[in-house]
Length: 417
Image (cartoon, rainbow, N blue to C red; front, side, top):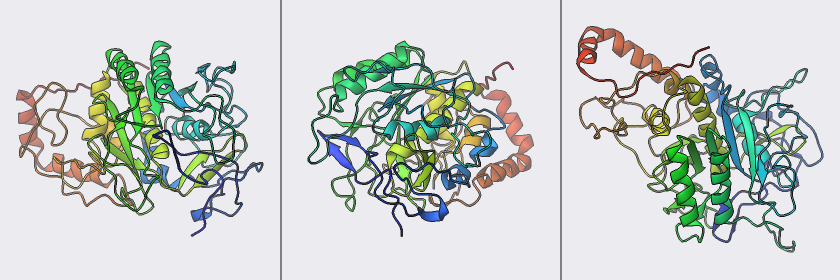
């Protein structure tokens, strides 16, 4: 299997913080599936959509919401506006916590934040055939630059190394400056010196109904050995922690696992926006790439249900995720693989098996398990929705009677056009 070494040469753990770097390309061979590998200095575009995007049936969800009117903050290394997937108006002024940087986060010497931002909100390019487009293709992106690059062997110490304190400050700044969703494809251990400040920033986000999504963390020390460990900000109860599916469609030991995992999303064979050079496909399995799929879905839900609380948005995402048994989660996949169309369209109430609905006790044995197969590469992501439609058709009369006496916990709130 060829390796797209352009975007991910190695995974590093720096000072206990988990980050997948995006240094200069070392290889020019094509990534799996025929999409171009990430190559420094070479502008190229993938002709076909990302397999991750199509397997999640994201294009079907665009008929419901595209993230229009929603601002997603990307707490990361900035966004390179030289990439044509970020035209004027798609990126709002953010901030930079890098000393001496006056670009408001609208530059990225490292490339990681640019890649993450493309998964969330990359635009189609007029006159260019490219399958690279973001989950929330009409959302506005807010760069919050919290580091400049990760130190590598032989390299000088960066001007702004990645720290828990800067992540915390970045989250707080995003909340204070109008973000509706915050993506953090970074993580720190539970003994981080910045943990108290981070918890405080996340409490502020929850009070203001800002949805925070974070990577569960990448196992860079020994990818062959499963690691169960609390990582922050994902471990905070008000944050959606996301693990990464590999090429076979399962969560493996390359994702840090634990109670902080709420859902899973694709983390390999993902198209990303690469620095200023267009787009390319990365075949590494990374939670850095899985988290922004969930942040993009949160932006779609914010458009669809503008008065929904952050808790209600999280519930829509977790309760509609695909999992082997409807009322069970695990430390690898959380509540399962996100299902964007279902999250946007499902009628939810407290009888739904799975995570506890807001202000309700968990429901056990009230609803038959879904019978879904274990998480795997799903050729038809809409099959569960069709199965549910058949069930409703068969039991429509009985269920209608139940619906009359049950108070819906999550009311559909649709934005006025």
